[in-house]
Length: 140
Ligand code: HEC
Image 1 (cartoon, protein in one colour):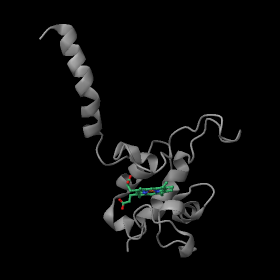
Image 2 (cartoon, protein in one colour; image 1 turned 30 degrees about the vertical axis):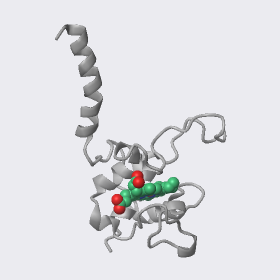
Image 3 (tube, protein in one colour; image 1 turned 120 degrees about the vertical axis):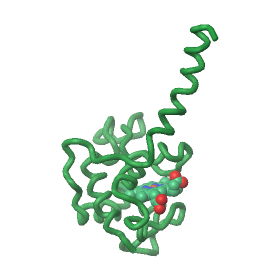
Image 4 (cartoon, rainbow, N blue to C red; image 1 turned 45 degrees about the horizontal axis):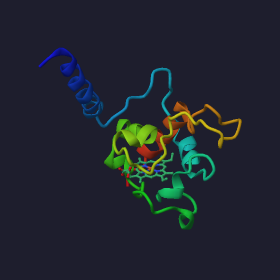
C-alpha cells in the first residue's frame, strides 16, 4: 500500500478506534471537589436550568410533572458507578450519538442564547459533580 493511501485509511479508522477506547466512564476532573448530594437533588429538580425532569422520572418532587422520554432514574446509583453517571451527564452522545439528552458540558453558542449564557456550558463541572453525587446516592 502506498503511503498516501495508508495515511487515508488510518485517518478513516482512527476516529472509530478513539470512540471504542473512550470507554464507559469519566473520572472527576482535577480541581473539582466531590459533589454535594443535596445541591445535586436541587439541580435535578430544577425545571428551568437542568431540565432533567422534562425527560426523566425518579424519586423527585412533583411526580405528575415528570417526563417519560427517558429511563426512570430511581436506583440509578445501584445500576451505574459514579464514573459512569458522570460520563452520561457530561456527554451522553459519546455513548449514543443520536441521544435526545443534551450534552451538558458543551458550550452553548449561537444567537438564541441569552447574553448571560453565551459561551457557557449549561452546567459547569462542579454542578455536574453535585448531580453525580446525588444520582449515585439513589440506590433503590
Ligand atoms: C431531552 C431529554 C433528556 C433530558 C433533558 C435529560 N436526559 Fe438523561 N437521558 C435521556 C435519554 C433519552 C436517555 C437514555 C439514553 C439515550 O437514549 O441516550 C438518558 C439517559 C440518562 C442516564 C442513564 C440512565 C440509565 O439508567 O442508563 C442518566 C444517568 C441521565 N440520563 C441523567 C440525566 C440528568 C442528570 C439530566 C439533567 C441534568 C438529564 N439526564 C436530562 C434524555 C434526557
